[in-house]
Image 1 (cartoon, rainbow, N blue to C red):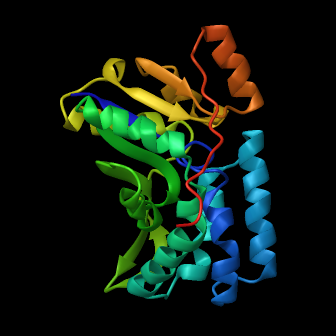
Image 2: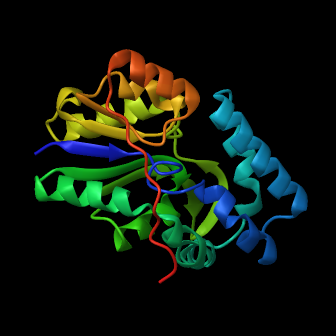
Image 3: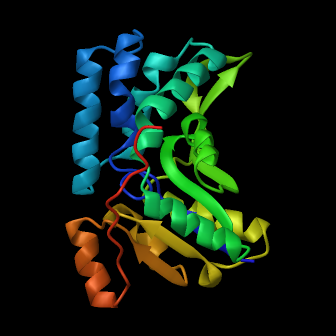
Length: 222
């Protein structure tokens, strides 16, 4: 058995889960217009490869502090059903299913919300989710989160930790991602698989001879 790690935003999903959720959170009163503008700005920084994850997430969790975990979970279920699931790439589902048939573990490794990504089990054969997790006390979110944030070089740390727990090594692992920010892990796995790669990752993939994938069709509304 081996492990296939999948990034989510831009890899499994057309677009970013956080951006797809903005209008629903705004209408529900969690965020305002300026929060939405700020979130879009963070996405630009991510695409440019200069986002400081800890600084961003310290600000991003603020609207949820004091909210009941069950309330947020219910809202995220609606986000998944209305915005996220229709934007999942059909080929990403096929790739995950192919790994499942080989007996591999399928692990979502992403800085998107773990509460949201747990719903991906509805569409893909997900074994585990390693994602951003805001902490709660007595069922209420607090101003803290589980560290490290699964972003950038931290993905290598978390993947290594996961594989050690399962008696595996990076040389047997596969990693699918679209972003140059994930280069540290891509360079260490046995099977690096750029998917819808950004410009800089495309150049690195060409230089290293990594097979690259382009995904187009999404599941669409059900």
